[in-house]
Length: 338
Image (cartoon, rainbow, N blue to C red; front, top):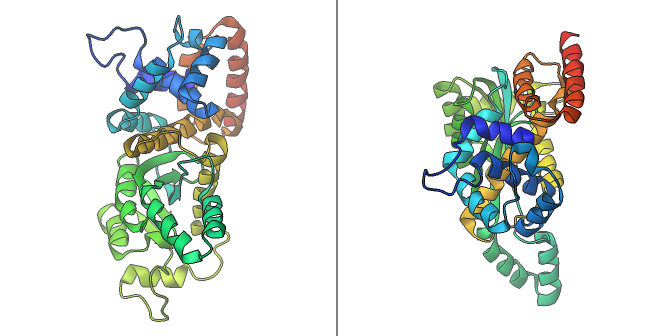
């Protein structure tokens, strides 16, 4: 909660308007929303948890915001104008020249999986085609999240929330462009769902990033691909990729598993727009959780910037907590020097 508040205080204004009541600041409400997302609670349960603890006092809140305040704050903070600066703050310490892995996943809109719904419809209908027809009608409203992750730290550098199923190839350009606006990348890795001539030329010719995209999308064929870069992928990505750069693409699957295991695979929002906003808030929460746990593996040159983040938090906490963070500073420093 303190890490989220410190991050938001760097990039978000204190208030949306000078005519607002000024009971709570936007960084304080953002920290409450991150706690709600991490604990996978409703607005009312989040209000009860915050009221029963003294967490709000640690970020300067003298009373707990009610559930309606949190709901309105979600609409103000989780939009594109506020989420993008938060992304910049999360991935600002990623070292340039790393690998970007791109992948996508789908979230459920109910607390039961689509496979369970399909099984129920199949056994109830008596005919498989009727069940598949009804299932395909609901597929247009399935939330879909596409992300670009930094392979070594599992931080999400770019994200795109949308609704509906379809080809992943059109999502490659906005994800890579957004990630390149936050740093330089040595290579971009993607599966066959992103295989496209336009994607290769965008990455290699316009952005200067070496693209590694597995071929095989579309109708199976033994003929070599027409494009130069796609023929190169057919040769170099044939067979096992263990120990090769393309093997880092599997880290994208790890991040998808982390998102769904830690933050849940079901969305609580009821409208399409707010579901897309909730997916982006999950991504920000995932990044904050990694930043909070980074001192365990402090072996990279970019770690000293984390010292500044934790030093600011240290100055705002009480004496009882300062001993733990000072011990954290000592452990991180020893690991980095080693």
